[in-house]
Length: 362
Image (cartoon, rainbow, N blue to C red; front, side, top):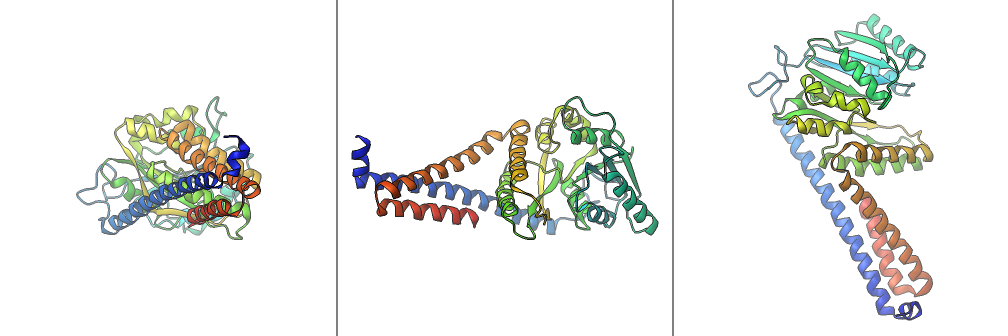
């Protein structure tokens, strides 16, 4: 039929509106099933965590020290001063970890503004005697890398400087103000049989609820579901068994990687280990200072890292493009119906669009 006859045929327009509405309902159902799977996984792992014995029992394998807790080293890479850096260092100093542990800070350079700030905080903590670590070191990144990111280069340098007795390496971000039992929980996550690395994730709760801050919070909420179900690690709260850093090939992969966490999945699988998400380690980030343009760059970077380094990137692409294109198609068709046909078909599709958006938000 010609376009004029098509738009004159009300039943046909309503049929197309119903078809797109059904597609929206199917996409919403898929999102709901993913969220339900995530919720069930979180509930099960929280229940297992409550029943799990402390490290040092008979089922504690390969991830322990003679007293039952692995000798741990926490690595924090710094470039620039994050607003939460002082709080983050104070939270690390207050860790209630039963085993011995150390802190290693790798700063981008001695001229970086993070160097004097971190040095001053460490000096104050040493003078007060309140820090629970056995030692804390501050070092500068050496020569800039020829390939890969500076963050990955800083981690490779840190791995080369680890103490001989270190059995567990924990990574943390400068904006993560961790809970007092954070290192304990990381050690427990690595205790499971077959688990080579474990960690948490982030949850944004913007303090002032700005527009870009809320967009990041909502986008990250959906990303958290996919990252958990697809076993995509987050480097802001991550622990890995020390022997696996080299034996799995992860350290070598970091030579040419953009990020450290997403690039960990394939080396772990090749070595016969897997990553385990610990819901107790979800960190709340209340930062609300991001603007729209940096937010777009941030989201683009998250998707790019999955594309470059994770084997499940086609599923991430399918989810992102599929839901976005379907929504754009539905909006364009709804506007056309509203302008060219009338109320009935437009009302049907408008209700479906509203239900989809509210459903995704819920």
